Length: 147
Image 1 (spheres, rainbow, N blue to C red):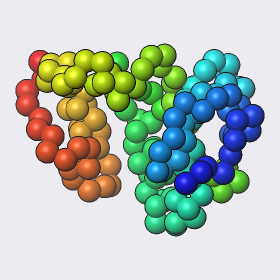
Image 2 (image 1 turned 90 degrees about the vertical axis):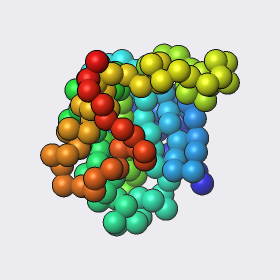
Image 3 (image 1 turned 90 degrees about the horizontal axis):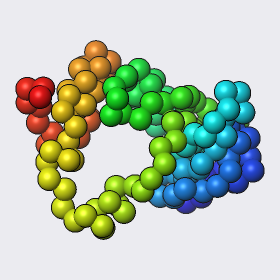
Image 4 (image 1 turned 120 degrees about the vertical axis):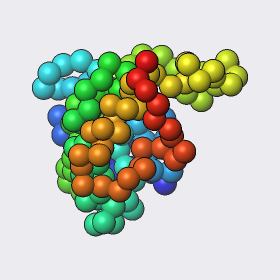
């Protein structure tokens, strides 16, 4: 499935400069924030998902929740929304490899490296205040005391 935009498009004030990755839900682009300057990563969902009213409402609601998270180990959301029928999520761009590449190089991660203390707790506490379903963060995740 391809997204409805291409490199060079300006979407909600973000100039899409290059494709970072692609998956079943959409594509992620390295983009320039034309209002504030600086690089951002913009996820653009495929048109089929944007046309599903139930999915669109859930995506916009959960994007607002994600944008409310403020933790040093959670990538900040810069903007999210819909423009000309295209759903997008813009976040701070972090230079480096992705999890797939890290696992390829390092193999299995030790729990101390895979889970950042307090990060999951922070997200779940914010999530608990939102009108949503319990347990949506990660299947099987266990919350222990913050370290």
